[in-house]
Amino acid sequence: MSLNEVSLIPFYDLSRDEQLDILNWRNNENVRKWMYNSQIICEADHFQFIASLKQVTDKEYFLLLSNGVKIGVVYFIGINKEQQCAEFGLYANPAKKGVGHILIETICDYAFNKLDCKRLTAKVFENNIKAIALYQNQKFRSYKQDKIDMEHNIICMELTYENWKF
View 1 (cartoon, rainbow, N blue to C red):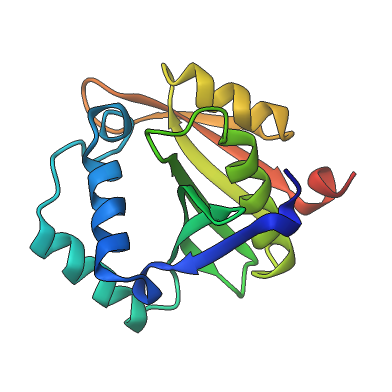
View 2: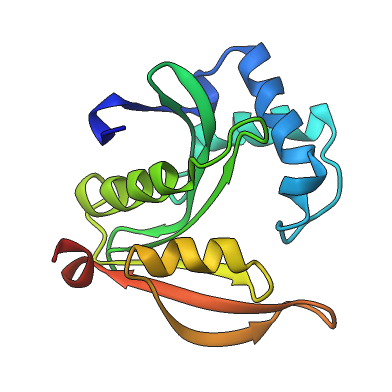
């Protein structure tokens, strides 16, 4: 699939049913186990969060469609236009397999070409081998390790525009 067949739809432009689909994905055990907040999110909190996205400039959350099929979520936090950087996250529709490369390629394309980032970062649990391999395949490199609590170590990864471009 080429990136030309991919659509990004902001969370706040989604129908209620589409927003509920995303909530169900996010609450799926195989998705939430990789989130900083691994708790189940209730509908009220989910809808409140989506409404809040209209008021902020440092976060963008999207449903990603490929050929009209809902394949996952990509998001950017800590968007800093002045420093030309952002952090990203992603999760796939639990019913879809093998879509990680589309998600990560879309993230890089959007960050570098739409957000005008020069540096893109991610934080990933050190035991999330699939995510680390996916990011490394896109030329991300580890630049720091950290702890978020007593149980979870994370790897901070980055990709610069210069490294992505070539």
